[in-house]
Amino acid sequence: MARAIMLQGTGSDVGKTVLVAGLCRAAKKRGLKVRPFKPQNMSNNAAVADIPGDNNHGGGEIGRAQWLQAIACGVAPSVHMNPVLLKPQTDVGAQVIVQGKVFGEARARDYQALKAKLMDAVLDSWGKVGEGADLVIVEGAGSPAEINLRGRDIANMGFATRADVPVVLVGDIDRGGVIASVAGTHLILPEEDRRMIVGYLINKFRGDVSLFDDGIKAIEKFTGWRCFGVVPWLKAAARLPSEDSVVLERLASGEARALKIAVPMLGRIANFDDLDPLKAEPQVEVVFVPPGKPLPVDAGLVVLPGSKSTIGDLLKFRENGWDRDLAAHRKRGGHVVGICGGFQMLGSRVRDPDGIEGSTTEAEGLGLLDIETVMEPEKTVRNVSAHSVQFDLPLEGYEIHLGRTTGPDTMRPSAIINGVADGAISADGKVSGTYMHGLFGANAFRGKFLESLGIKGGGIDYRAEVERALDDVAAELESHLDCDAIFGLAR
Image (cartoon, rainbow, N blue to C red):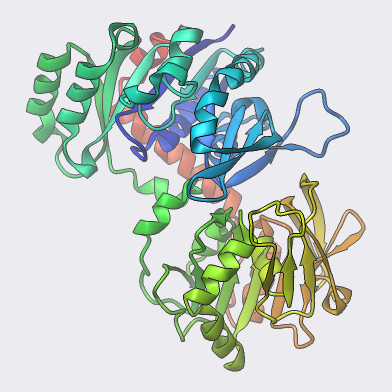
């Protein structure tokens, strides 16, 4: 079995995902065969990964973070890197993905009872991830301080103690109270869990790091733990795909640029990293519009992103008045793109006769495309190579969706996927939709698409930008952390 080290946070959103990706890249640069692992993840930003040994399946789902961490390691993503993925569908329930495949649905209380059964899958995947590797870097979820959930935990100390993986605790100084959060975690953890922690690091520090020297002494006094370093605010992290929709709450419109793209923040928004290649374009401003705010009238393009609950988000879309904003945008000659669930919303009707997504089984669509969608039980999950019909250029991406879409506008497909027509385009060419995620990741297509909107010189090499960002993060971590000690404590 490969040696391993685990990063757990004093809370959610402390930056574990980027730190693990950066450490993975740093280890790779040292010549180590390194792999990422996250026992349990909760995100509607999913990626398609290989299911080893399953030659008849198109692929399985993992969290987008583990897909990014696999890139950092220079290896293909595998479903075993994230054996349990929760995809929230309502405020109290989620779809449960186990080793890439749909396991079922569970309300929050029911899922707690289910965890014991899922530990077997977690440990099975754990054994597979380590095969042929020198080092596995594990990411926890939430916080080990949630001792009310400890009895059935599979994401933090429940996993660490079973797999005997030492833990580095991550504290986020940007949110304040970091000394209390680290010392408080030490105070409330049972001894069995506390002894798994080999030290801690401080993340997201702004300014002169030496100003926290007394803070390090205070934490050592309370806990006896060693400090592996203080990581500054990593500017390069902004150039990496974001995993969790919690970051959308902090996104604001930046400086005005040649093209403004408006993206309504759906309640169950999924795979919003589809917009990242557009955000990286120097002439493009991507604005995520929160509920209660109108779609900006100066947007040249509105993108309806994916959704884990198409009908539910469609109803909320109307409640926000975004349907009227979108109709006005269309009257002004604006362009619209719908991806996956957003594509389904653009039609005349969405039906869910089996109640797959919830109790509401039918909703009127936005009527911008002459199509209808019927939800069906079987989920399509696969990586694809495709071709843009509109611009006669290659595309590459993935599909994760339920539903079959038909109607006159599908006779003008937006793409050809594996020889089959996909999506739809309006008669005037200004409204289009597709089931393919990753649409804007193709550099040549993105450049031509932006040119059709009046923006010339687009089409940067987005994947190369991600690779450079990973290198930059790794370099910062090497400068500010004792990486030798962290890797040396892996066992």
